[in-house]
Structure formats: C-alpha cells, structure tokens
Length: 321
Image 1: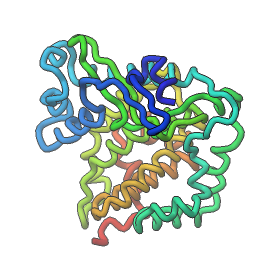
Image 2: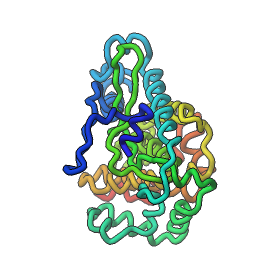
Image 3: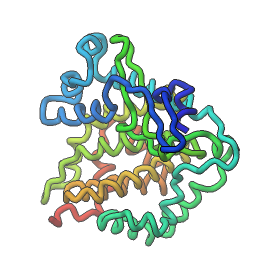
Image 4: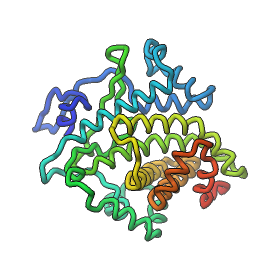
C-alpha cells in the first residue's frame, strides 16, 4: 500500500523490500511532523498568540517564516496535504484487498479490541452503546456507499498530524509526505478526510483548561484563538482535496472520527484529559446525531462557539475531581 502511495508522490519513495523479513525501507525525508508544528501552535497559549507560537517554531525555516505569515503557512500546508491525499484516493485497489478501518467498527467492537482499551475508553464506549440511536447511526455509516469507487479506493486509515512530514527541501516551497501505512487498505476516502479534520478539531478542543466551580462557557472561551487556526487549516485542506463543502454524511463521519480520538484521550491517565475526552466525544455525538445544526454551531459561527461547547459539555460533571 505504501509503495502504491509513493508512486503518486504522496509518500516517501520505496528503496527496498525484503519479503523474507517482511521489511520495507523508504527514503529518509528531512523535515518535521505536522504534529510538531501544531504543538508549537498550541503551546503558544503560554506565550502570546497562536501566530507567535508558530512564528517562533524551530520547525519552520527562518527564510520561510519571512515569506509568509503563520496562518498563511498553515493554510498552505493544509492545502498541500489535501492535494496529496486526493492523489492517493484516485488509486483503486483490486477486489480482495484488506479493508481499512471503518467508523462502523465503533458500533460493534471486537473482543480483541476490547482487550486493548483502558478503563477510561471502556467507560466511554459502554455509554455510547447504551444509546441505541448513536449505535444505529454508526452502523449505517459503514453501510453501502453511493459509489463503488468509495469502497475500493486506497485509504490510509489513520491519517493524523503525526503521520504527515513537512519538508523544506527547496527552502522556498514546503512539501508534505504521508507516512505509516500499516493500517491502509480499501475503503471510503471520506473517512481519511474525516480523520484529518478530527485531528485538528480535537487539538482545538483540547486547548480548553477546565476550571472547577467555574461556568463552562467561561473557560471554553480560551479555545477561540486555536479554533480560528484549526478552521482555517480545515478549510484549506478541504479546498486542496477538492471538496470545499461538507455535506451531512461528511459531518457524521467527522463525528465518528472524533469518537475515535476521544477513546485515545480517555486512556491518557490524566483527569483533565479524561474531561476533555468527554467533551470531544460529545461534540462527535452531536455531529453524528444532528449534523446540520452541529456543523453550523461549531464551525460556521463567526461569533465564537463558547455557548455551543458549553451546551455540549453540560452533561459532564466537570466539578467532580
């Protein structure tokens, strides 16, 4: 799968394959992960602004920083990632190839998967399975798609920022490469798109700083600067991919991808991250069950979204420490 992706220019070149050792050797790419860039961005909350954090990032060459403001740089990287992913999704796999991860797996988790989940993730999963409407919606997301192509395209299956390398080989124009293809297979390209969006949305939500005894809307307001950056990056990514508009199914898939992110957060072992996992999960559930309204509240509002996030958080006992 990785070799196929490399042929499109979206992944590092395959240098050697040893079938006996089941080993692939790819070219080494100079650069940093998109995760590093986004962490610099989020870390700026202890400095001045998100733009200041990205501007100071050692991941960006000084020459490149001088050419573009930070938000324009992030938008450029997002657009390049969208273009790279689109080139991968144009590849069709022959029948019989393994299937990539699908959102419907959340509705019917295997015994093996249960064994890999920690206490926090199991608690979240059990609460979802008590919601018959949510389980049904998740199962339907994995049902027959509108086109046969969306079931035979090559998809990455785990496309998050730590699986994207940003390089500056020509010191003028960045390039992106997608790595770690072990979960790749045949599937719905829209799921890869949703995973990228969910990674950016969850990073925005996780900049919240829960404060015991304080109204949720008060401390959720601190996420607004990162929200603006995340939404600009998502818009650029979708534009580069060639799908600037999000329909209802895309919103539901984004919700399912957020549930996957919430499971990972819930097992982090930190109480704050467990609270944030429930916030991410509730936003995901709203997108699955009420896609139009939720997408408008969380992503289209130009006046901030503290109220919408506070409403999503209302069932969470943030004061119980």
